[in-house]
Image (cartoon, rainbow, N blue to C red):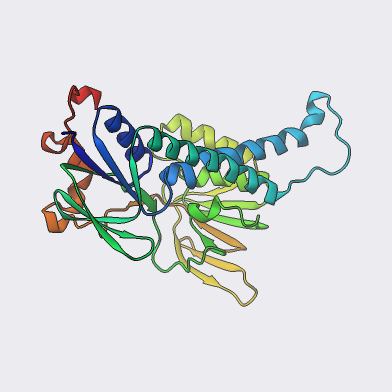
Length: 308
């Protein structure tokens, strides 16, 4: 009998594990509450790189004269077309993953899963009905979401996360980005290229402080070239929305910044709630270590730890 494996989450961790396990002969069921591909494919890596390609194309046309190329008329962009291209690229990749699932016999259940026991996952499907899936092994691959700051009036329009930013609903005249990490910096260049006046606020002394100091210095030079203002060693203490729709951010250094939009990009939070981990004796802090332990590593015929 093949090993029955249930995977909660169809992001890069979940869907790759599903396909590999199926190739090894396992009977695999994947549970996903949103769309296959997870954040990386739908709201992160792939869409942002697609948007960056459009932004770079715009920048190349604007600078064509430097290469002896004459472009007549005003150079602009069609945001709807940029978004349409991004959506098309994502859609093709999503269909590709689903096609691989079908080819390798991986079952996909659309819904939210939680553990009733170490070998039973309860799924609340999108229509509200529930079903229980019994298996020999369970992999938790639920990924993460944008971290939020308390007291910020997130509305998806004036105060947004990276999930909202990638949807490109509009390009504001002014944008304040809270956090100068990798994600925040990426969006700074994107929105600046499309015409926004961008200011970044970072509570530590450098941008992308998790990277090498040389990388931080290089990025900060590029931010300056792009006329993106970077304020370091500063926190946003309070955010208020005025009657004119403008946002006012009060900083720890006593300054105030008025801006049309605020993007909060301070890292990511684990999607480890409501999984039933405590009910089966697994603390949420230990969830990330499950796959590193021998007893939770899936064992399939002919497989070795290095192969998994």
